[in-house]
Image 1 (cartoon, rainbow, N blue to C red):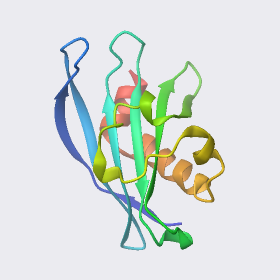
Image 2 (spheres, rainbow, N blue to C red):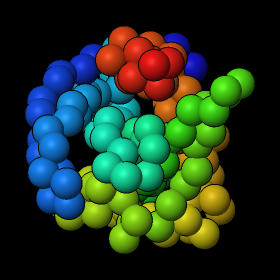
Image 3 (cartoon, one colour):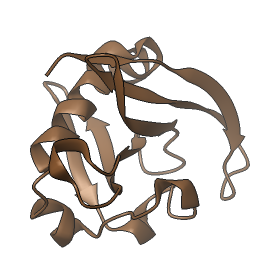
Image 4 (cartoon, rainbow, N blue to C red):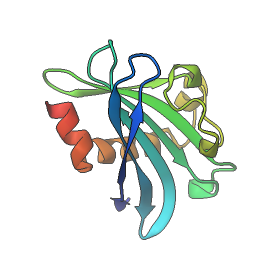
Length: 137
């Protein structure tokens, strides 16, 4: 899978603490074909450093019958970056209608696209400079 990413930086404000933070959003391409979009909010409020990530893979990719999305919490540790799939209500992106279908954790773990979601997430964490530097600080 030859993945390429683009990205755009926007700012948002936390409803809880009222602090401004960066959001990275963009598209994912495989062999120059758009396959997915992603959103990455880099703000932790009071829970430690966190990237609240959502990835939506389009209908038709690898036979997918519909566009589907997952929400991940991405946290750095001293030795690695941990990624956990969460239910929609735990995601910063729960109200983003253009993600189409934000799957619940159990459904996402059973999805035939699970490996693709994590492959894309790895690329985002390693290749988007703002995400990489945020997690490294």
